[in-house]
Length: 349
Image (cartoon, rainbow, N blue to C red; front, side, top):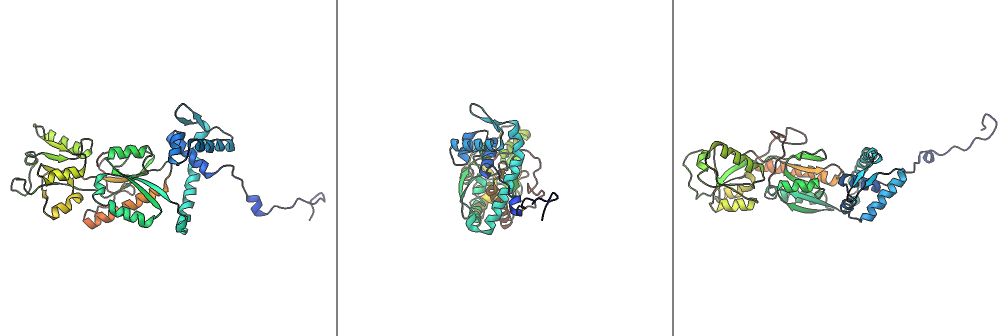
């Protein structure tokens, strides 16, 4: 076959050759770019990636060379995105999301393709006393190559650790109202008044708050929502200063209550065994603090598929526990689960 001028045309390229595109950078460089942009530090990004700061600098330099643009302004202890870096941020996030979906697909096709990962998990103490053992068993069964580091602390601390990217997933009293944090709702924990059977209370079906005020009130720590709600209620209705004993741990609250020191407001699921064996008894009162609402919260920037899957598994385990113990509530929102009366941040354990 000849061209219009009678010359022989150049040979046609094969389809696969025509469609081949040489990408001048690697996914790892984009991942490093997003971490540095999120954390504002080469050193923090290196710690998160379990590598060295020079390695992070090399990846960023290689990406800048490949793109022909400067992505970061280096300052004394922090870095910030240039205008070109800001433009790269959204497409880099999209590329990584696609890469993560491909990785998840590969993992589902072959169990051996899942690499060993560490999930840095933070939980409030209420979770430790209820469904945490079930969750750890389910996590091990579903993701046998994922290792778990666990921190048990108050919600305020867990939130700070999550926002600082020192935790991958936190089960705390939420939601955490930050644009970069995803929250998956859990069934609520009703609070009940309990005391030692030896404590002498008025002999009637329901006692009043004034009856409770005759004894010390054992509560959550001062920095928590249950304490604040209880303190406002008692000081708003009575002139005398209430005797509230705040405790930094549920174990301490339970111990004081068992010893007859006072009346406590505690999650029903935490004290059910003590009630069943007669060591504690429920006190019916005309008022009690609001139920505790927990969320499984994780950062979506940068994306963390292990944390996302673990959060969804935690929600499933929590709902199963609630159904088994008779405290299940129907979610009213796909993301936040049981309704929160007002979207305010709360703290607790």
